[in-house]
Amino acid sequence: TAINASVLIERDGKIGWVVLNRPGQLNAINDEIRIGIPQALELLDADKEIRIIVFRGEGTRGFCAGADIKEKRAAETSIEVRQRIEKKRWIEALDKVGKPIIAAIHGYCMGGGMELALACDIRFAAPDVVFSVPETGLGLIPGGGGTQRLARVVGPGHALDLLLTGDRIGATEAKNIGLVTRVSSSAELLVNEVRELALKIASKSPAATMYVKRAARDALDLDLKTGLDLELNLFALLAPTMDVKEAALAFSEKRAPVFTGS
Ligand code: CO8
Image (cartoon, rainbow, N blue to C red; front, top):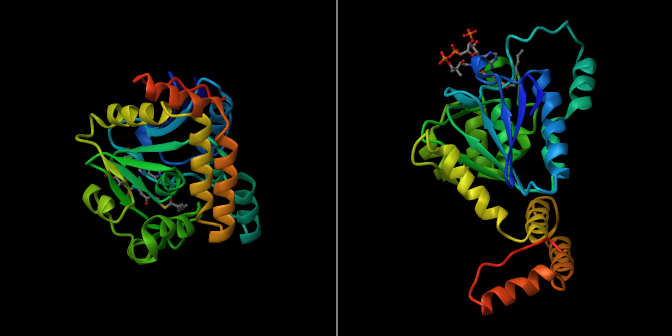
């Protein structure tokens, strides 16, 4: 299904793929992408068949080469820029999604593309991946959460190194600093290997999956006592559910559990 010319949705069983579809422009971010991604996420998060969402970029060259540098805009004041960006806040749409989100990243993943990947729960890269946050070389700073999310993912030292230099890093270094947690065996196999990971996650209890995501993500924003209270509340909510009974029954019957989310 096309959300618009630049954003597609592919329903693949329990997996909902969100595809950046501007391969000729290295999937550079235009207004269709900024508007289409929140719409795609809303549809997939509400779809009961879908258990997990994956972002990928169309074409062989890369996931996303950042904001469209060729996009023409009328001259704007700082206040107008702020209002325009504030209205969309499109990467923050990922924070509102209850289902897990994976970024399947090959080739170029730069600037705004890297900020999109940073807002996902899991980053799975191909061996040909090239990450960079080159904004200061364009006279700017990241504007899609990069200054905040990068340090939370890789720590302040690696974040500042990347943000100050704009240096490009590949799959090995990205894995070493924790920017990605997995690297596929080849660029061609990325989608297949991401699908396997997504299906594994989708085979778990859907309620437990949503709660563990919420608790672990909120851990970054909460003090320990509040976070532990949240965890206890969510644990207690899950304990009496049918899925927990089903898991125990499946264990004693030596079979795989069938979860319903109830
Ligand atoms: N915006 C628009 N078009 C792009 C972009 C982009 N970010 N990246 C690539 N393209 C286009 C190219 O123009 C080219 O199109 P065409 O064939 O019509 O000329 C096509 O994609 C293929 O790209 P290249 O021919 O350049 O391919 P190369 O292999 O030579 O180089 C690179 C690949 C290294 C990725 C190179 O394209 C590049 O450096 N791209 C720009 C990367 C970048 O700096 N992105 C911006 C990051 S900063 C950000 O996202 C937030 C700040 C936004 C500032 C906006 C300022 C107005």
